[in-house]
Structure formats: structure tokens, C-alpha cells
Image 1 (spheres, rainbow, N blue to C red):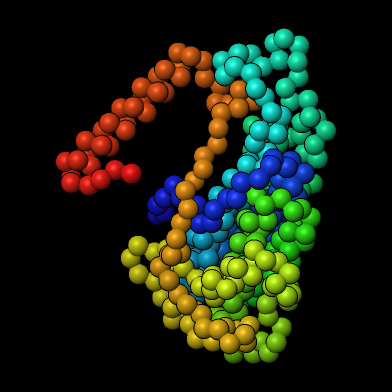
Image 2: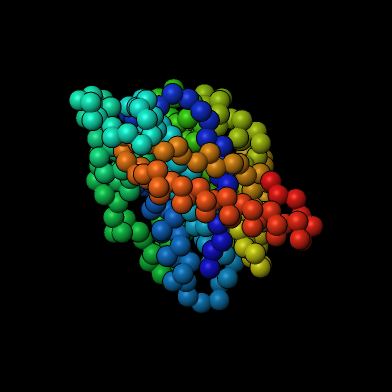
Amino acid sequence: MFYHVRELINPIVADEPDPSAANALQEGLGGQFGEMRTMMQYLFQSFNFRGNAAPYRDLIQSVGIEEISHVELITKTISQLLDGSPRYQGDKFATPGAGGEAPMDMAKEQMNPHHFIVGAQAALPVDAAGNPWQGSYVHAHGNLVLDLLDNLVLEATGRLQKCRIYQMSSNKTLRSTVAFLIARDSAHQMAFAKALETLGVNWGKILPIPAFEASDYPEVQALIDAGINRQQYHFNLESSQLATIFQGASPANDGTELEALAEPEQSYPDPGAPERPEEFSPGLDPELQALVDALTDYKETTAKKAAKKNGKKTR
């Protein structure tokens, strides 16, 4: 059972739309080593977990739950990189293109026109080449040591690819999200490496993968300075044995200590996405819009009355 809070695990920094950057970032979402795979792989491993080694199950599941928030973050980042690219300026309820103009003329020249044809300037479950995400990417062997080794390689490969994506664009929207994912991939490497340490593995100096000077990636350096590369969250409303494993010296041998927390210390507003009439999204006519507005007003009024009754302030 899961609960959702409509806030993001990292802020999305505003910049100009960049469909090319959005397509590169698709690899980090729907590629073989992207966030959709990490989410599904760790969740399936935890759901299928056998035996009484609960601390290892809780560790794998905690990372899997966090990956749900990463999928959310990266999809919204891709959508923001796409949103508004055609610069449609017509009336909301007009028929875009009715006068002979082509408000999405630029879309056909993009690396992935499916962003505009299949999706309404939104992320898709595909890689950067447009190949659909596949369930066959998911490895849930049922052998704890093999699963942990597989997960460490997955995090290392994903981190390597995100470092490459970071260098493909100077767009602040892309870089802020990719930098965060690079830092968190490092934390997840430490999580799986620490679990393997408890099973007798000695890492020496090979972690993290890839090794690079963090100052060359200023957004990543800021996050490392804040310590998010050595934190792991269990996201459990009841109890978790994550801290049984995720504690002590970092396997990266960088002099830092690992820290297990219930959740990130801060979350960030979900900016939402504006309507796109040129995409017929959401495609409401004035009558339907009036019904939506009435429902929204009713829900807000009801929420305020309930909050007042309970003595709480509404935000």
C-alpha cells in the first residue's frame, strides 16, 4: 500500500523549453538503465522477497519507493522541457489551426515528434531512440547476493549515463534534475554496497562509479555538500529495518557516515502543467470547463469548512 503527496522530491528549475534536451532525458526515464527500470526492479525484488532477512528487504524496498518519486520528477522535467515549445497564443476555446496556421509546425522537426503526436508535450515511457520501455529489463533473481550485485551495477550504469546527459545540455531545467539524480544514484550505490559489505564484500577504492571531480558538476557538488549522497529514506509509515544495514562508514571510503532517515528533510511544490489548446489537452469546451470549475470550487469550499471545523488552517 502506498500514499501519495503532491510534492516533488527535488525542485524543477525554470528555463526555456528544449525538446532536444527532453529527448536526451528520455533515456534516463525509459531506457534500459533508467528510472522506470530501477523503480520496477527494486519493487519486484522486495515484493517477491523470500525468507526472514527483513533488513535487506526493507533496504531494497526503500530505494524502490524513492524511485517512484524519481519517475515522477523526471517525467515532469521532460514535460516542462517540452511545454510551450510551439508557442501557441490562440484563444483557449478556439480550434487551433482553423485559420490555416500550423501552431505546432516546429514539432515535426524534433528528434521525437511523438512527444507532440502521442503525448501532449509530455514524457513518454520510451528511451531516447523512441523504443518502448520493456518489462524484460527488470531483474528479480530471488537470490539476495545476485540481486544486490545487479542493483549496484544498475545504479552505476544509470549514474554514468546521467553524467553524459548532463554534459549534453546547459539547460537549467535538465541539469537541476539530472544533478539530483546523479547524487541520489551515488547514495543508492552506497546502500547496495553497504548491504554487500555486511555479507563479506570489501570494496577498496572502486566506489562510486563513475568517479569524477564533483566540482566539475556544480549542481552535483552543492547536493553532495548538503549530504544527500549519504542519506537513504525508508518512506515507511510504520517501521523499517533499513538502518540495520544503512549505517556506519560509507563504502566510498570518503570519510563520511551513512544516515538513514524516514523521508527527505524537504519536499517541493509540484508546479503542475498548463493547458495546451493546440494539443486539445485537456480538451474542454466552455460548458465542460464550467462544470470543472464548479467542482473545484465545491472541493475547496468543503476542504475549508472541514479545516475550520477541525481547527486547522488551510494552505
